[in-house]
Image (cartoon, rainbow, N blue to C red; front, side):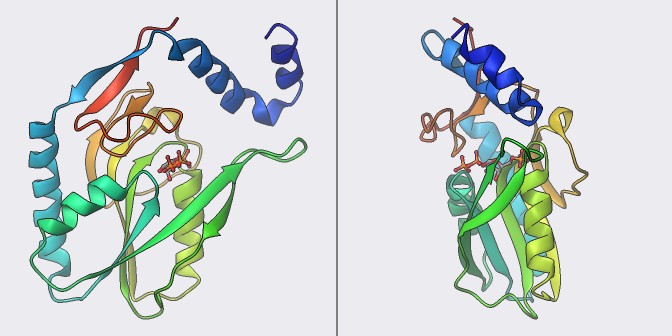
Length: 203
Ligand code: PRP
């Protein structure tokens, strides 16, 4: 680790992401999830979002686009509170940092099957962090000429924002900590926790 850290710091665009990764490796031995938002609170919030979405979309036969993987639990619960015709599709994106490029490049790794042109599209996210993924997706979908395009996110971490993103339907604002559960992962773990938790206890 002593040799690895200076090497990573040499590449400025890796710095933030990789230091976070190193911290997460240190954290993994003793870190424990602590409940931030309980199942009860989550259900109330998802019902509230569903009511807002129902009000705006019930006559529009919208297309909901879930961003994999993190949004799958939220989306599954949300649509079951919606009592009107809608369609769902999924997209999977990946961001990466190249040695000589600015971090946050995003690419589509699993595309949509649905036509977006002329549809009322609602993106379903689990978290907006730096905003880079969402900003990319909004631009990507806008180029396909939807009738309308909006964003619903379960959580928002505004303290980490690098590009501005307007969230039309927001569940929770979260602190600048690792947030897991209810679809959100920590090194692919904890997606199955029923509560939204923060990881506490660095090793
Ligand atoms: C998460 C989340 C968003 C993105 C937000 O996905 O689902 O898509 O990060 O981050 P940003 O605002 O900094 O761009 P992640 O890449 O962790 O994949 P996952 O959903 O499979 O966990």
